[in-house]
Length: 435
Image 1: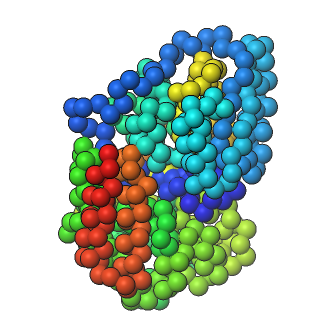
Image 2: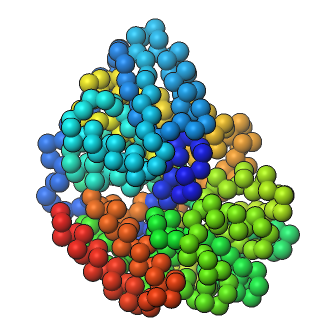
Image 3: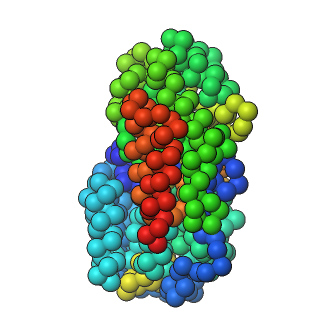
């Protein structure tokens, strides 16, 4: 949900919005945490017992509270822990994801105690953990792992350790006009062929993180990878990835997607679908509620899981948000108490039923209030459960840029699919050489 829509955690929707893990195979394109040499040795380790009787103020930092959901969190948390002498304070960052990341980095480089708990994009874990800016949360998370849907935990797994707790999760769907077709074709090839025969499809093709997500869904389904299992080598220049890229190129060339799709982010894709001109759209769950308000598609659309890649498999890109504790927190016990509450049943029900965010606990999906608020919750849980994390690396921003820049040029007809993968390989190798 990269459209930065006004929801609880607007920045943390990178690839889902919240955004979301990828992979058609077990390695998900390279986890980046292997190898015999620890990259995070010496990082602070959380003490689960520090929660007991925690007092004082705990500062929670994240993007602009556009809906008032954080205000609700603050009210609920402070009421619950007032008798213990613990309270939460909200430090509001700008709405932009890039600006939030900058705010995080500046504080951590200064070893500032301004923030105890950060709302973190799922793609930042490796970068921040390697800098030893985060508490190693493994002792705490090992005791709670069974509560969570497994896939979101992958976004916190780096160097064999867990660096936080999931907050909300996300996975994309194919939206389709139920008045024009009964179902979504079983494969991407069939879907794009149907789109090219007059139905049409829109997706996120602009040069930004959203295109990385869209492309990874096809590439990983085709059997491609981006990094080796140890995260040290680029593997993007492969026949599988060239094939996936070519398929996306062809749907534009054949008229199945508008040429302007190379400039579309989430909002533009949604607006195009809502004109009624296109039968299909790839987008995140946030678009569901907005489509119900759009006259030309209201009551005339449904959602379906992503199709398979012919001759290969299926893949999902995981979005969402995580909670991490600053290594420079002045109140780690209070910080852990807040993280525990926000990733627990009470708050998970709130963000799902009131703010349409995908919960990360198994039990939350069974709550009647959540099922009513998210009528596609069963499909969302299935999609999230099948997803894997995007390539985990301290240089992920450069890796993503190598993908979306070169794939966008291929979609625009400026370079071939084969050359796009060759250049992406070179760009990623250059990024990997820096650490």
